Length: 183
Image 1 (cartoon, rainbow, N blue to C red):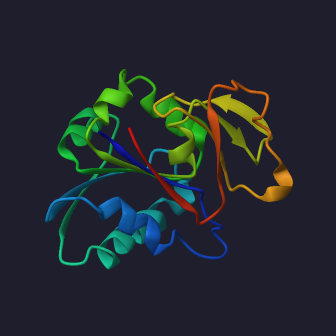
Image 2 (cartoon, rainbow, N blue to C red):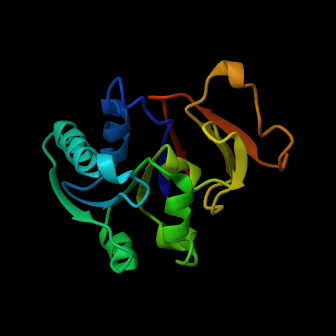
């Protein structure tokens, strides 16, 4: 069974992802935790600071656990996923993340028995469909989880995914909100 920790994103002008997301990501992990950081979606100008923030947040929420990090590249993606206990998919540009990992077939099997933690774009890419608040577009995710997703959600948006594939539930993820699912 795979555990998915989904995060609704954050306002870069306010603060970074809250502790709850990292605590949930580390829950049910062994004493020595292998964390694979996938920052394919991140904007270049924020990459270094986001990697530091992410590592710091994992460290701040590890308790007595020992953490080992490995950075993803397109070349080591499959090996890194096999190595990891936790796979962190960063926020940023969903389309860029999809382009980088769609070539890896059977993502659901690649993520099997892992903890997959997705922030914003990292949550979108896992979905069946997602709504981009910025471009106001509905797009197809990689279909790893059986949901439609709206990140950075606010109530005044309504449900732009209401008419899309009614067999899938829509997850409304507010900024700084964390939800967990197991499949």
